[in-house]
Length: 225
Image (cartoon, rainbow, N blue to C red; front, side):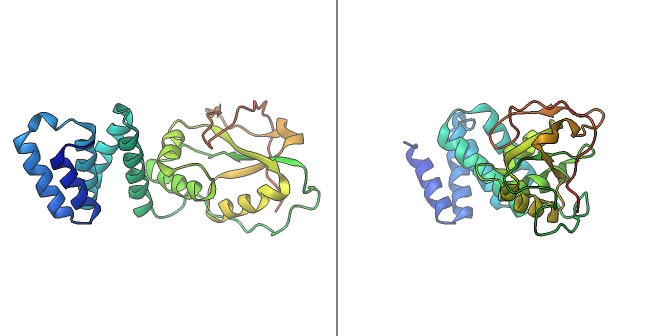
């Protein structure tokens, strides 16, 4: 249950009256400065900064909330707001040019064979590239969100995104390839041929990003085009 004046801030915000919500919040903080660090108050400070176009301030507050609070509702709204910020202003351009892939599987592949979709960036991605890739991946991978994906990308490394039958993963691979994302398909029968570039490590972390499958990797793999 929110404090009554915070309820008024919430109501104004939910109705799209952002100026009114900001004024009410400012008045509340002047009267009760001790509540400034409350997670709910900080949430609305961050949300209102975002509505005012002050993205760096909004992002800093929302990220801090994700690290400091255990309030589930606040966590949900902060994560949702960060995802909206990322989707609303994706970095333009791609770090790699997409290639034209055939609509069907390579001739020597069978539809039922197991393949792995692998995230394998050739170099360290800068923050804008990470943001663009995270937003795009979140659209293609159910159960993921752009904010969490971007956090995991910052740790670097090659990752297994999914393991399924070739016929199921080929359309997803083609879509990500058209978007210019650094992914490849690896045939499970040839797993030892996966290339891991110098200074890269394979990571496995769940939540739609990586799996627990170990890779002993030498050589190279990429489906023939």
